[in-house]
Length: 433
Image (cartoon, rainbow, N blue to C red):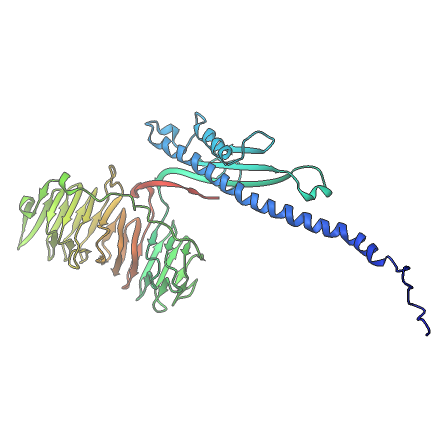
């Protein structure tokens, strides 16, 4: 039998496979080395980031305390190095001592890089971990560097929000319709709803303008640049209620009042002017017709019945907060009519900057209807209720609106000009980078 000229006799096989294995083995080892060391680096990156975040937040908590030490010149500063030392300690507790061997930890107060360079009340933490090589020693000898950075804020100051709608799921959580025009010129409009129509424009005429729209869901019924004037960012994580820790007034600390304790001036032709004192008003207050109201500075606690002002008279409330403790559908705050409304919030105390405060258990709409003579400053706060705005003319309806839902209707122009002097300071302690 003839043998093929290409057949290799037994015992004389070629070594081609062994040669190929020898050539490929370093490549395979390199791939394994990169996979193993890459996995370790990825895991350590997550760990160092968590440690940097924790260290920055710890230092931010110390910076926040400087706003209450009696010396305003210390606000947001780390004069004694307490915040920096705290950040280093937290990093070390998480396995990243600033020893130059295991890790290098840098704490900058204020930050030296990023968006908040040189700003008081901010802390920057940078962790550079020296990861020992594993199989990747075949490529080099030095440690691998794993770096993470975090910036946190610890301040006591007014929060820069124009309108915040807290409803997490509903469509039209922020709605504008009719011929209404709303302007929030200096701060963002935030809608927490995940709905694809979280912000909704009904018709082609209404507009809402803002420095920035932040939506957890999306917008519908309107067109950006036509109905929604300003940059829109969707998919933004929800913003918590900034006033969720603000306690409701204690009525036992306030005097009992009524219309019988008010000073009443007879203006003639059945028209009266009521001069009211702050305190608890059982069954609330209601005014209409041509009567006018002057509210002296302080807290007005509506113990059922709500607060209603309608008609042709004027309302003057300087340094006043109305708290609506009602629970039923008739226990509402309603400001309407054709008369002038001038309202400012308290400038000091627990409720500094708060103009209208509706009990969190009250879901009745807070209604504002202006006819061009309304000038309300401060915060409208209805955490579980709609703020319903309507009317005509040019109206200022507060410096900030925090509510469950917000609705603009009518043919008026409604302004929400953020003003830090008329907005309550809150604890702002969070990661920002």
